[in-house]
Image (cartoon, rainbow, N blue to C red; front, side, top):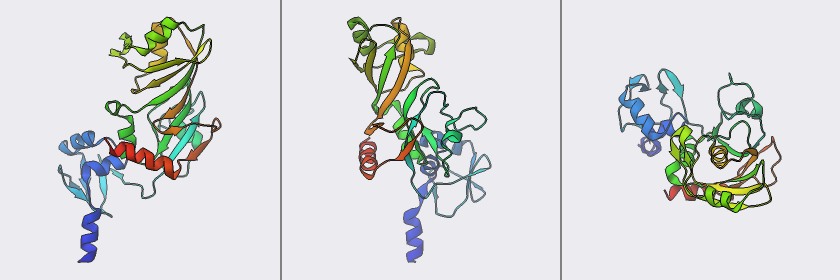
Length: 244
């Protein structure tokens, strides 16, 4: 009786299970379930059902599972490394780190950029960090190809239309750091956003480095190296995610 009660307490809703396993978001999981692509112990899953420890879950015939041990790394991505889990892609981040457990990047940094990227096996946390509607801050140091003007800084702070991707940026914080350097804090992650913003004003980015994601700082972590998040960093990260 006690064993059955313990297992019931450990049961996880199927959409949450798939999210924690890093397959997709909960909303996407609900769609996969509706389409009949998810099975539990060989039976087609239904919305709202729960998964017990030890049950076999598959998505389109492929087994998925939640990692028991939480992994959360801060990695200083060098330029030239691609933020993809596909090992068919040359210079992919997974092969570069060569971590002994299955992990994946939280979001992206384009190939020509460097700096902080988080790596984890916690799909649920990864999805919540990446959601633009949560307004999570990401901070960057940027160098451009010519001297920065006051008009440029003011323009970058305001919404900027990015016609090539059909989007408009949110207002953001921008401070001048040197003749050709500035610091910018974003709360969204549009494709090549900072580079496109600079191009809109006639500037070209020559160096882009991410130095912070939410409460996690790059600090003095050397290029190409990674470290585990501290207990304090993990606690603060969880507290912020739990407030959403």
